Image 1 (cartoon, rainbow, N blue to C red):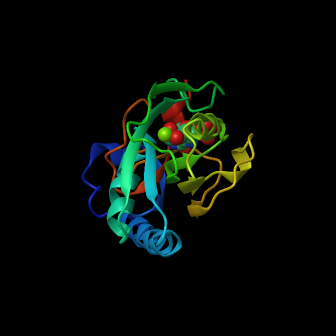
Image 2 (cartoon, rainbow, N blue to C red; image 1 turned 90 degrees about the vertical axis):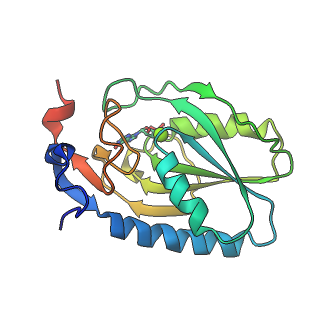
Length: 189
Ligand code: IMP
Ligand code: MG
């Protein structure tokens, strides 16, 4: 299995193995879009994605959803140049839309310890939305430290460091179309 579009990219050589190809991701995103469109048919849906990792997933998911909806962005950072969580979350950008009475669906690239989303959910609730649910593309269930109910999950993955499809290590690898596991020698110093 390989990423047809990525083979020529130098970045591709830093991957230990491929988890999901672009095609597999697109298929799953389209299924999620159909499910969300059915579940939120009579709701006032607002997707909120977390910068920067979530934006590639958001860009594909918003187009896979067939009902009218809005989207917005928040900025949060919990990883500082390392491949492990510090537990500290820094909010770098707040939402711009008024979320009062809206049905908010958080669109996250990956759920690891859960610290980032638990802080974001508490902040969003101050705006009094009708509901707040989570849609994450990748779930590292084994790494979870905070209990969070997931309404939609793209893929369950092992507790390894994943890059591509928006996910980075030191701001690199976001532009790989698929998802792969980074070679440990890249992030171990
Ligand atoms: P959490 O707060 O531990 O759940 O971390 C969530 C955030 O950490 C994600 O939004 C990512 O930005 C980052 N993260 C967690 N695991 C990975 C990974 O395997 N690769 C790249 N980024 C990750
Ligand atoms: Mg992120």
